[in-house]
Image 1 (tube, helix red, strand yellow):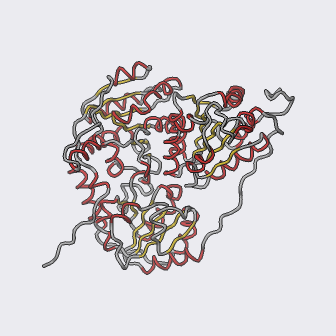
Image 2 (cartoon, one colour; image 1 turned 90 degrees about the vertical axis):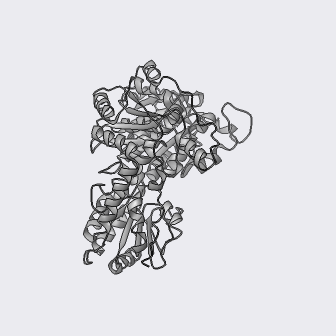
Image 3 (tube, one colour; image 1 turned 180 degrees about the vertical axis):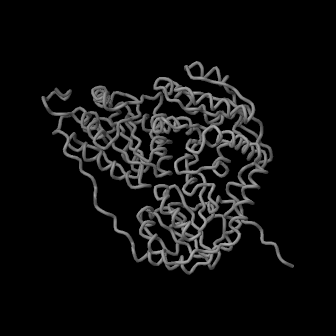
Length: 548
């Protein structure tokens, strides 16, 4: 008998569980609360088929769903109560929005009959739906149990399109408790997206005519890495990627460049193809040469500036577009770009020399993780440099917070990534400031035996902000010195493993040992002031030296 009180009829909560399973999702992150009581009762009944990872804070649940989605490419699902629960999860939702991640947020609501009446119900927000409409790329308020399967299925269909997440559903308690007909057969949006073949043919001609084309690839092109790599190699076109897009073309490939290398080639480039990227830094900081054409391939016409500045905009999924473009290029000659190898070598050498302390630690991390390991980087000194200097050989092996730049997100996000990749080595790179944003999720990691290795670089301050205060604001240092716990004792108090190391070699050895356990490990690395990485992450164009 359903808890709705009617024999043989499932309630809305049970339909949620059945729809999740039908869509291939058997892991949900979340916290219970009174508006979600029917849903958690259904989770209990379905515990043999669906795993609930209960977290200590709503932001932890949402960040873990984000990490699961980023690491796997599959939907990451979380659920929290309305009002403060939603607001606590807001930073993670805004990060998922910035990254276009396939996250599905199942948010509670007050009773359907009370929505909008301003009665002061528990957890009531004024116009919660309006907030979610702005935090998610798609949103539905579910008003009856019968609507649950269709609404949840539509959310899955929307986030299945790369870059179209997150999606949010509001589920009032009466909807979750009310009865409905059994779950219908799976229905999926199978309408094929039309491809702008004429525009792709025009791009093919532009590639043929170009002397020095260059591809800039973003995270929106990750799922299209294979055809992109084939096109780049066939046409001998360099591919520029950085941060969360690293690995689209293996960093070891001679054609794989970062922004520092690309900056020295920019003025000679006559065709730029932006695939799944905003190209924010180059297009805002580097004047586009008058003779250079910009072509943008993206599924989202609202992105900027790569879409708004394009001479040709191809609105399409990157995978479908590149698969269609590839045969069109078959008869064109490969390019003979001069200077690409030198630009790559010079950029690598400058990063190695100027950021040697950070690179020393990153090399140690890479030795321990290997090619198949994954790092999740917070906004911290080592994390900054990882986005440009950490060698990545495959997509989804470095996870960042994209343009949102979310301080404190990495530890909880990395827990979700490890859940998605239980057999791979996953490490969170955090600072002492950001770690404490979600450090209590150590309890979740211990409870669920999530074997994440967390690399905690401790300088006793918000180091990047302090550098700005010292160099830009004349030494007006304020609010950047931190009071920290004894981190190893703190981690061990939860039942996690903890160790402190001092050198890159000791770090690599400690990581190797940590990956032998199925429990979380925190490795603390006390550090001092690091060299400024920003001129190498977002470089200015080289000055033109006059021949005279």
